Length: 328
Image 1 (cartoon, one colour):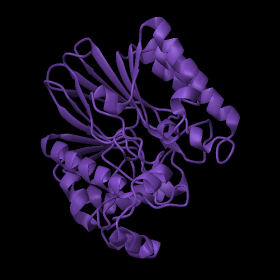
Image 2: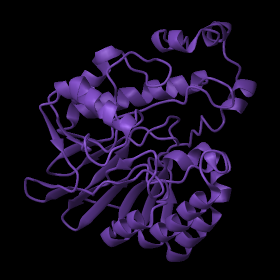
Image 3: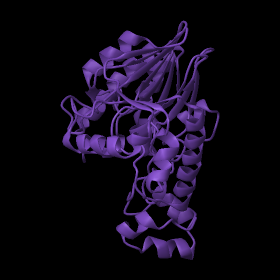
């Protein structure tokens, strides 16, 4: 698809974890986008299955390997599946106190979402904490909102204005989208826009006209529960317009937490097919098998029961599980 921009997803729902972490390389610069990865602590009344812990361990290792090569690390917003915190947590984030964050951010230039403007309360706190912990290992922290950075001869990295994490005036706050251009090629990274649900965000994406986009789809699994159904449908309708415009879409994140996501996004696939455009998960983009582990958690526990040791670990308190590695 692209000759001058190499795109390698490292963490994603289709790879078994909550993440959109992606490594991007051009002849001029090596970038690690949103270097976080998480597991949902409870889904269907169950903790992560051992297969999910194996997946997050694999993804963490790949992220650390990519960080060794990267010059730049980005942080689109302060949710823990998009950046790495500096505390021990083996239940959700697979982190060892400060060591994991140090491996990723040490001596890097880190482009961050402004932690003081267009940010909700919880992310403001996390942004402050990141600057005091993981961010202190960085060579430089640079506020990236609406800025463009040029690397050597031919690569531009542009960050959008803050856009809503879902619908307009979302309680979840704002995120940054990233556009990486090299020669005549353009890759766009649109995390947690949830479709996009917001029409203004859709307009920004359509205006860019990238050849390749990685985008977070709407949270189908929360429809009618935590997210109004009309917002879900708006996200799907706007996603139809994205796939009609962009030749190849890597569709990821919230949308894949619903086992029936492909059926519910049927119209999106039809719109892309009519234009001769592709829709792929991150795993499919890598020519790997999809691992929708969270969506299949209930079945995993039935079809692949964990060991007695793991069941014993499951009975520990949530606080204890964060500090004790599961026996996988």
